[in-house]
Image (cartoon, rainbow over all chains, first blue to last red; front, side, top):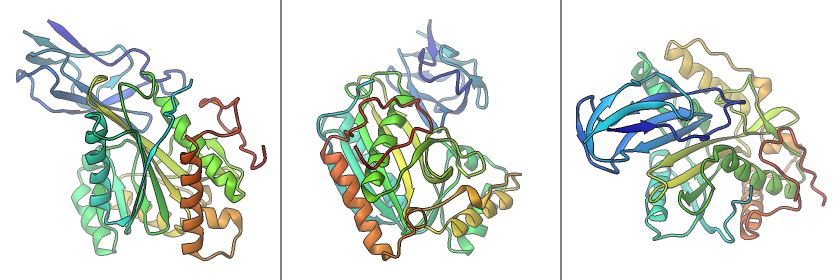
Length: 79
Length: 260
C-alpha cells in the first residue's frame, strides 16, 4: 500500500497555511498506472498536479474541497 | 535560492486568441518536460478575455456567468493555473516562464518560482523608469502574495501550474502585466463575472493600475507595449539577472530602484 502525499515543504505554511484538493482524475476504486496524473491541489495561486507513485487500486481519503498541507495523505494505492 | 537557468529560449508569440495562447503554454511545457526544448520564456498577448480557474468553473451559476460575459464581448476561458478570474486584453503583456521540474527550481519552491518571475518583471519595469514592489493587493481581483505593485496598486498578477512528476514534468509560472489595460474596464468585467456567478466578491478599482498610468506617460499604447516587451527580452537575455544581489523572493514590498 502506497500513500499519495502532498510533498513536504511544497509551500511556506507560515504565509499560506493550507491548500485545497480541486480535482481527482480517477474515481475511488479505480485502477491506475504508475505515473498517471492522479490529483490536483490549489495553493498560493498554484495548480499542483500529483502523479501516481505506483500502480494500484485507488482509495481516496481527501475528496475535492478538502483542505491540505504539505505531508497530507490524499489517498492510497493498493497493489 | 539560486535557480535561474543560464539562458532562456525566448519566444514572442505576438497576439493570439486566448484559448490558443493558453494552450501554447501546455504544448511548450510538454516539450520542455521531454527535453525537446530548453527553459523557455514566452511573451504573448491576447484578444479580450476573462481567464478563470478550475475553482470558478465549479460555481453553480458558472455557465450563466459565461453567457452573460460573452454577450458583452468578454469570452471566458479556463486556464490551468491557480488564483481567480483575471481580465486580459490587447493592453496586457503576458510572460510565461516554462521550465522542467527536474533541473530548474529546487523542489519545493513555489515561492522561489514566484520570486524569479517577479524579479524579472521588476527589473524590466525599472528599465522603463518604474519603481515597483512585490506583495499582496487584498482589494484587487485575483490577489496573491506575489503581485507586482506600483504605489500599492496591482500592476501585474502571477500564477503557476506544476504538471507531471519531478522526473518528467514542467513548471509554468505566468504573469499578466497591465501595460495599457484600463483598470476600470478590467475591474468592471471581473466584478460582473462574479456577480453573474452569484458570488459575493467585491473589488476596489483603486487597487489596480497599469504601466502607462504609473509612468504618467503620453507614449502611444503600441509604443509602450513594444518598450515593455523589449525591456523584458533584454532582462531575459541577461539570464533574468539584476543588480540586486541581495534579492530574496520572500522580501515583500522590496523596492526595486531603477538605478544600480
